[in-house]
Image (cartoon, rainbow, N blue to C red; front, side, top):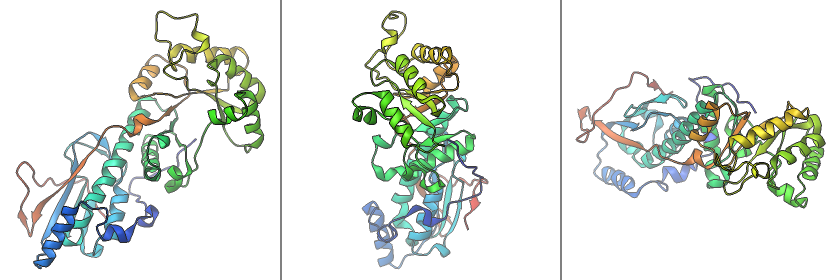
Length: 362
């Protein structure tokens, strides 16, 4: 579950993004007032040369810049007549810092503001959330698992934003669908799921065995062991059955349940879900029975805060699966015309903020 090396200064080519070029160029995805603005300017033969400045308001990790540039290159009405300076995906950014400027005839790109701002907002949110989880996890692998919590059309770009964060941190990020991995040439990863266990009548060992018979030899087989709410027993049974084929077990106990191994230990801690004591019981049982090499993946409601606490307490987790918390929050972007025909025209409260970190986009 590794991430390819990524070097700052590389940008994905525009064709990577499979954009709906004609619809974007026609303003189909654009807030109507930008289309109306462009129409009014063209009707008046007014073609102001502007500097458009793009920023957001948080300490964050930049995502979506390559995609935003692709939109400008392919969907403007004259890329060669525009001058664009921008930061790179994965760059750390500060509140109000200019991440991109677009200079040129405003009517060439007025219809694209909605689209490039939306791309930057979404991908920066994902990259920032993933970077915070990676920092909390102290270099341990994470599995990016929010695909089932959102529309499928966001998977590809979100997966790439997660990959960018992982590459910049030098930490492995696994994604769960091929779509999420497509822009960087990876593949989706996954565990033996509850659905397969249910398809074999709730028999985790049988499902895991059949999965192992199907899986390629180099497949890192990880098995969910909470189906019967008896994770210690199930983990041992799976480890005995699969032997060296088993890479890891995944603990995913519902936050509304108490695992059977903890029924006699209630009172001084919250026993629900995947908690420290459950993880330690599974680890101790595996080690005591000669399965020291089997990894433990923890998932189910994990957030930055929960991972931070697990790491602070030295809970023996080898990898974290994180889902819906990675797509929550906001990193909204704003565009302002700050110069027009050489004059300062920024609205009250805004100003031209040059950024020496920006680089010319070829």
